[in-house]
Length: 220
Figure 1 (cartoon, helix red, strand yellow):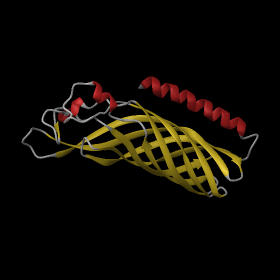
Figure 2 (cartoon, one colour):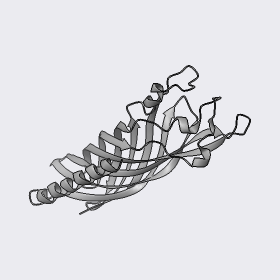
Figure 3 (cartoon, helix red, strand yellow):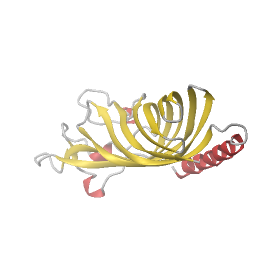
Figure 4 (cartoon, one colour):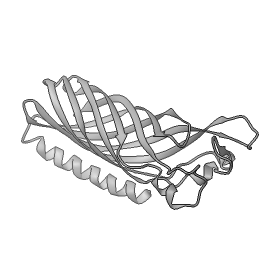
């Protein structure tokens, strides 16, 4: 995971350099620094999951293509969390166990300009690289709700490369905007679990990323 962050940090530097040169050619190219919160979950029929609040930060470059169309590309870092129902023993009451991971995304969004420099709709793909699932060591042997032997530590190996689709809107002023976006994971987040011999109740493990995020971007 550290190598991923080094790679994308280099990618970020290159983006900054490209945008800095573009500033001399077009007044519609801006570097943006952004931050916000997210509500993250995995949509699945295998487990009872609950969305939890995480945080995001990063930067992007917004460039004017034509009067009614911008392109937005950049990199974001995430601290993502969701809850999963489990119990300490087979006879214990169910409780919510916090699952978390770190992630980095590269996104490329087309932005339909509704009001020039003030309101836009955005749509596009994102490539996400993330760690495996983390949890409190005290919960590693908790039995997942709906199973007899499947434990929290059995499901930590998830897909570390994910492809998401992003749709959202941004509104504000030329150098200050708020954004709201929804992300959906196209691929199976739990696919690696199907390569292991785990209790699965006769069903394939399958789940998709679902994330709402909101925040603000300052453009320079």
